[in-house]
Length: 174
Image 1 (cartoon, one colour):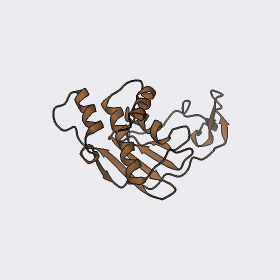
Image 2: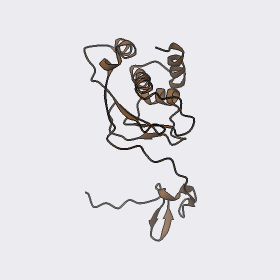
Image 3: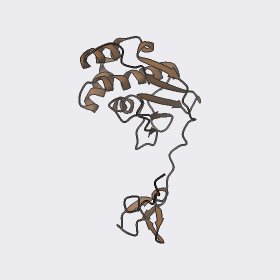
């Protein structure tokens, strides 16, 4: 284990925890199996299926971030991370195995950080292809609140261009 990199992840996240350890080890697995390097732009993409602590390690280690558009959230709630290498076309889905045994948080974190990677994770192929690169959109001013939003987040309502906050959703229950 790269102790300095772990400490960098802890400093970014704010504390040590089993969730951060899962993201840390998921990155180790992806680096080992896909030959990943830090992503300066969008060379590497991670689609995380959760919004938990491990995502902070993903950002620190891989360089995948929301701002760059190469960290995407697909909210299944599963402790799974889908990694894509745009240069090679390779991809990998890393899924945390269920918590084995009766461990407290400290024991669980130690297990995650020290156990063989195949005892911590299952591996497979992502269920979808590599996401398209981030696009730039024109900015539109909401005709209700006056705030700007990208055009793909604007809706028409009563003939006005409105942002998602001002839009009154219409649903008949299904």
